[in-house]
Amino acid sequence: MSDWKDDYNLLGLGGFTSLITKVNVSLWGNEVLIECVYNPEERLPYMLEFKHCRDINWTVHDEEAVSELEAEFFGISLGDAEHRKPAVITTDIFEISILYGSFSIHKGENLNGEVADLETEVLVSQSPAVL
Image 1 (cartoon, one colour):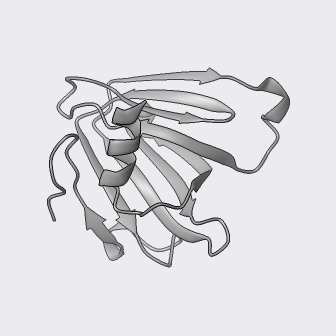
Image 2 (tube, rainbow, N blue to C red):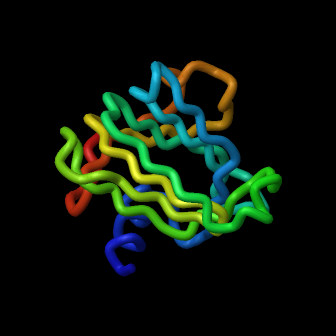
């Protein structure tokens, strides 16, 4: 579990919790965009973007909670890009595993704008963020 906390810290969000508000799967599963808010009291938006995905596994843990609008972000393991090791995101409702080619995080105020307009960081698990 400590690897998950380390990878969550790589996202550069600090010590507050996050909530997942939406998961978008597009291009027949080739791209996954996970919309989140950091610090639920201030609701600061960010997105996790996985591109060139080859495999997505989804498990629902709490069938009674599937109608909830937000899932509590419990942890993330970023895995390894270039389809070497899947990223695993765990919440109170579901867990998703994504075998991906590239990953980036987008931070900004306007989630309705183009992703390119947001501040973007490309992250690599177990190493410093690359801007």
